[in-house]
Length: 365
Figure 1 (cartoon, rainbow, N blue to C red):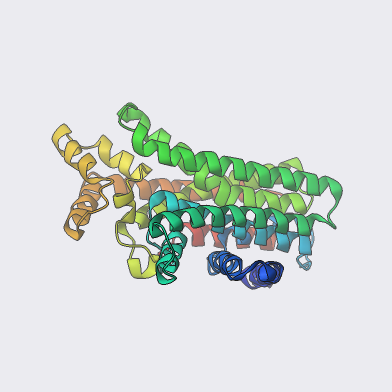
Figure 2: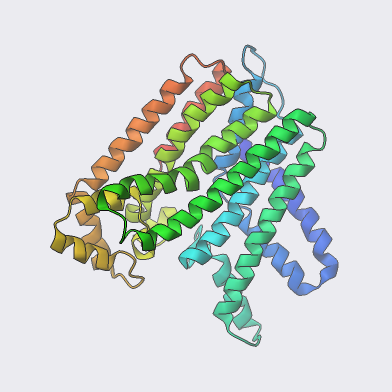
């Protein structure tokens, strides 16, 4: 398999150059502004870089089709990949506010960090409210940065490819925002939706909030920047969407059963947040009315004890919900692999896509 530059190194260097420019631009705005920009820089670094990896892989899959060469990654693709990572940081900051999460990647979530800063500076007013407000604005700043970085890369791009890339990025932003709302809404709307619809509703959220956003659109953005034709674009979409669904289902499993030392989040955090995932939908569908009432009373309780978390975990296992979700993950991984067979894509890049698929669906964090 050809050797390609480590995408995390390439993209992280581009992100850091951009962030340093933002620090410099805010230097004259005062200490508070500099601290705000620095918190954005902190939020935008340290991730796993899945979206950047898929964007780079999508570009390579098309750019190397029918060739044996390994072209250098152009600036426009590096910038687009970096923009995806910064937008992801924005989504996480807002997600943590919505979910009232205390930690992110083993550190205080942005709203908690700003709450602590408010307290340490002995500022007036309510520290918790200030932290939420600061984090909402921080997420907005990161969204603006992602647009800025994308546009920096597109300056030298072919006009048609640049136009299509903007459309892909905009579609991703719209869909993930709708998906995030549906995720929030489902925590309330599930009580009026027929039980037999819960699995499909959970999958709708998984598709918009994660599958398209995390895998499919990054892949197709990279492919677009390489000049993909309709067949190549479709093949990467047929690969990316099921892998994205499997990626989200793995995330759901880790949100209930993951090791906090690895995930950086408390054990059973999704249970305390009341996430109505496919895992929960499958478990609820198998419970008798009495057991279902107890299950629903516990899901979403912010004060769940370790013993209660353990009870919910056992219930999910005993109903067969965990096994069903694992079957879906395997089935989607197999569907994605079939989409690559015979596709007019670079051979080395196809091998890389299969490696990325395994990394996205078989992981501990």
